[in-house]
Image 1: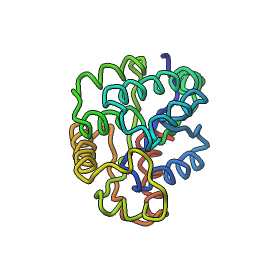
Image 2 (image 1 turned 180 degrees about the horizontal axis):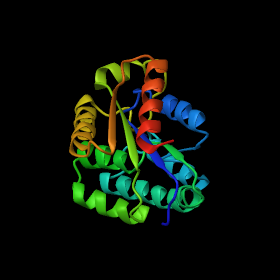
Image 3 (image 1 turned 90 degrees about the vertical axis):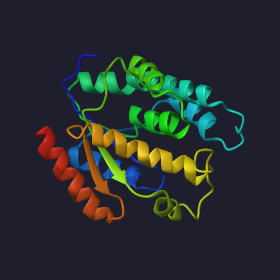
Image 4 (image 1 turned 180 degrees about the vertical axis):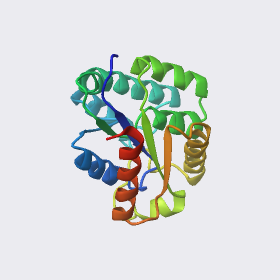
Length: 203
């Protein structure tokens, strides 16, 4: 994928506030806003399967492959054309969620998850990743008034592994990752994120 645009991903567990911050950041940068899973019509159908709490029998490997399929379609329809045109893309989740959720959370082989998703992406990973870091207990207190989907119904050990996974990836690649405290106010987070993104990418 030839690319002259910037690819920015917002990451974190459910309830951390990343979707709100993705909207805020894309608006401030006049960027393309997208999400994984579900950033395309085909992706929405895959997302329905993945998030349906009735699908309790879906195997971890099948889950990982479905998400990689969504990612390949997202690359073809959203990432490739927009980045090639020089646009900035802000994504609510990215390939790093697969490493965190299916690799660390489901305890699948990390190298296998990385390889299948690198193939799906054609090697085009995010330029910058913003991790909204918050403990599982604090994030899930924010979800108390809504019906939980298939992922959100997982137990605390699953999400603790995911939090640890995100933190490990951020520590291993500090030039790409920017970690912010998810307990800060929405406006404070938005200001910190926008400042870092603009200064780092020269926007």
